[in-house]
Structures are given as structure tokens and as C-alpha cells.
Image (cartoon, rainbow, N blue to C red; front, side, top):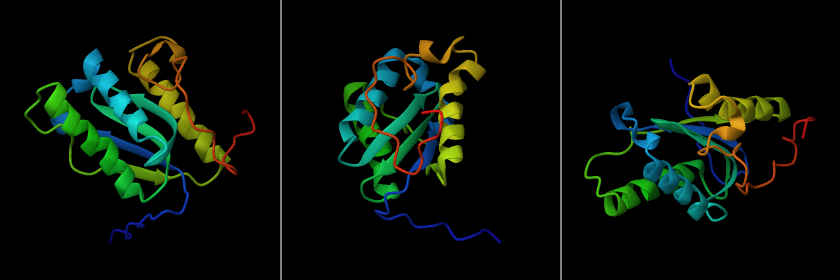
Amino acid sequence: MRPKREHSTNNRQTYFVGSQSAERKPLFKYDRWAKLLIDCLYHYRGTGYLLHEFVIMHDHFHLLITPTGSLEKAAQLVKGGFSFRAKKELEYPWEVWQKGYSDHRVRNATDYGEHVTYIHMNPVRKGYCAKVEDYPYSSAFPGFELDPVPQGLKPESL
């Protein structure tokens, strides 16, 4: 029997969130697509969630966010907001995302640090770049403004 999914309301918890493109199509290997998704992430930052880390892979994304409302609403803003803009600006008539998303509530500083490492290393593991700071669609790339690590989740290394 599956455990009941925790309904997340505005409890100021931080989450590791991910979602995949429909049929795992490599939509985000294209610069216009990846940049549009990053633009959407920043459009809703502050109103829908705090953005701590992200990576846009060819067929999925990972985020570390603290929703300002519910987690469900934050995911809807990212996925729905992007889908709307992709259909309008990129003239993409098909489904963009698989249904749903995966999430993990970050429990402590160690957990937070492990997810930051996972996000940063994902493009290196896939062979997209040699160093984390070389991948332009990741918060590890220089120049992205991020929200501070939530109190209580700051790894000792920060």
C-alpha cells in the first residue's frame, strides 16, 4: 500500500522538484527552449516560490524551491506558465510535459547539500559539460541570482 501523499500548503518548507517533458522529448537541448524555461522560472520567482537552485536538462528539470503558497501551485506556475508561453512564442502545438511532477521535502542541511550537488553535477554526469560552471542552463553557471538558502538548511560548507 502506498503512503498517502503529504499535501503541502504554505508551510515554508523547501522542496526538490522535477518534471519530465512529454515522451521525454529533448526539447530543452535547444537554446530557445531552455532560455524560455529559465525566463519562466524567474518570472514567478518571489510570487510563487523562492528559487534556490535549478538545472534544465534536455528532457527534464530539477529545482530547489520554497513555495510561497502550495507546492502544487508552484509546480503549476512553472509547468503551466512555460506550456502557455511555448505554445504562444515557440508555436508548439503538442503537450510539453508529462503529467505530474516528483518532489522531495528537504529535511535538513545535509539533505539540502546533497540535492545542490545533484543539481550541479547532473549535466556533468550526462556529458553535457566538463565542469558544473560551464553548463549555461544551471544555477551553477555564473550570473544567476538566487534566493538565499533557507535558515536551518544552510550546509556548513556555505
